[in-house]
View 1 (cartoon, rainbow, N blue to C red):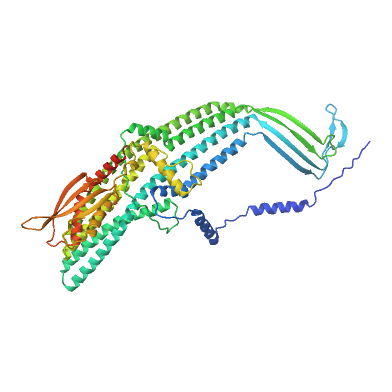
View 2: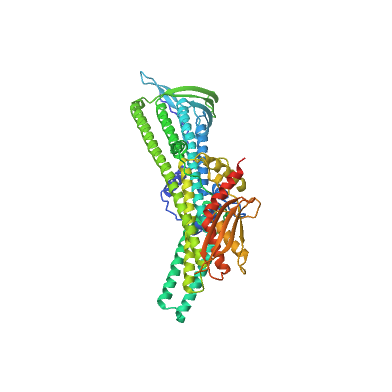
Length: 633
């Protein structure tokens, strides 16, 4: 008996059209050409970057102190901002890793359609006789939906170790942020004091340049008029140009520091600012307990802490590889729905448990153990090499600081000698070109020496900062986000003082106090104004890190003019005394020199400058010692 079956068949509508569209999209995807950025796009990017770099900055409200500069560098420095963003990114990745440990709840829904019926027939196993006519239990079109809650023990273990690694990556990002912060402190300290030195001497350099230009003009006129022989005139001009070259070289060298400081504070280009002009800090003596510094460096340096965290990341990597060898236990459960009308139950729930294991992975155990041991030895060798480098940096930085202090003292003494030479030259100068040349030469040399002293002091500050950096001390507070500049600067001052105490027994800030100086000039010859001479002496006092004031707490520096009997030449002396407000004398010294028969205000002022310079070192020492005694209870 024959039996015929009629099966309804259908085809997806528009199948050729869909196939053609898919082929077209595929071919289009294989023919992408490089497209360069347009000039407008680049210009827009530059504009946006410039706007964002200087966005929301507090305008400058006056001279910038050292703590203000640090506060601005901390708040607006782009490198530090980048490290803070990287730290935030690491914390976000940690949150993502922690979420991977949660069970998986997967919701799935869809629509299914086919162009013919699914189904089949049944064939006997023994006789191969068809025992069931073709049939189907699935509609050609139907909807389905399911939600599955599953938990895999192996995935949980691997996610746990990944989260531990992500947590250590957060710590690594924090240590890198600390390193950038410490480098900023060092760079700001170096640039600030060089820029301040240039600021102090810029006006004097401009005045000297004007004087040299005038002298050059006079010498050229004298050469053209035949007053000076050409050889003498050219030699004179050459000497003036040499002096100008020396001054300009030193001025430019230190002026660059202002631009460096502006970049560290992320100030917009062209922003003009001034620095607080205060006496230089007298830095602490070099630390003697090198062993203490080395131990502090090994405990605090961000690079070594970063290596510790990297070692923990390596340990968790090994644990993760070992955990991957364990069987995978998977638990799942969830509801199901299917719109297929042939199903007896269109809604149901199921649950299950499965265990799987890759047995071939067990063969990797020896390799994992070898890799783990090699990683441990590598991490330890790298950390020890870095520790040796850190110890070397500490010792070298301390020695450099000692040498910088010696260089600073030599530069200070050289500056005082050159200032005295300039004062003596001005005191004995006349209107002759040779005398004017000598005066300009000594003045320029004195200014160059002051530039050299400012450079040496900035180098000492940089060496001081290098010692602090080599030890790894955090010199800035931890929580500063959203703080205004004055509050942040105050917090930085306190944090700096506490951090420096960990390295030096007595910090620089504790040694900067000194009594102010009140200048008195008496017994001047007739026709010489007291204010001009006193102003010259006060200028010497302020140039040498002292303050002038007329308060009741000020030490009194008195210069009394006296003639000295001499048969051949006119000689005079200053009687220089330093006394406390109550009258107790701390210093008494005489300074004798040659003067014209009728001394002018200029020559007498220069003579007074030389006398003040002859005792200025003792005055500085006594002013500080007196301040220390006054502070004791």
